[in-house]
Image (cartoon, one colour):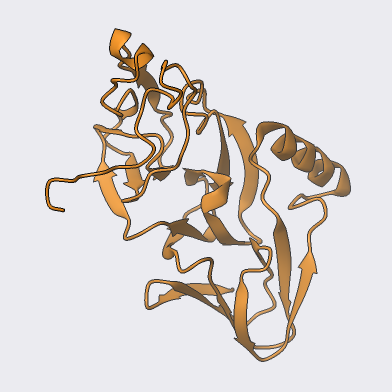
Length: 234
């Protein structure tokens, strides 16, 4: 099978030795040895043209669309993949094991994995996580993270804008902490959370927050700071 490993945390090395193909983020290849063929996937992964087409429609409607390419080896080969110097996490998924992840954080997964989009119901305020991409084993997947990943075992609470992925069967609960201060632009910047309760769930977050949120503050800044800023040590 194709084997995933990281090089210096920022590059994914895939060793192809038995003809297994791999789905990767389009344009992520930075070098290879041997003979590899790269094809843009017009519809995306699917067992048939019909399922691939429906999957493409679903991803476009939910905002979880991920441009993919199919990497096919001809004989033994080694490929190197990366994206904007982001850190890479490699997961070995057993049969039926599920990882739920934002589509923008997917770098690659083996052809043996199932890839789909499902409703998680946690994105009304943050605009992230309402629909989440799902990868189900068996197989390997490589996920992207802005900075070194931080793994938390549930029970835990995380910021949806720092959330990368979680491994487990339980979906998180969405919780808000909104008061009148949000409406006058005096919010703390931490107004909504994802709560995970199942101890069998592992949650990975990143030391970087996405820009999101709806504008409910009278100052036009969405009731939260545009970036984390600590002037005490400046």
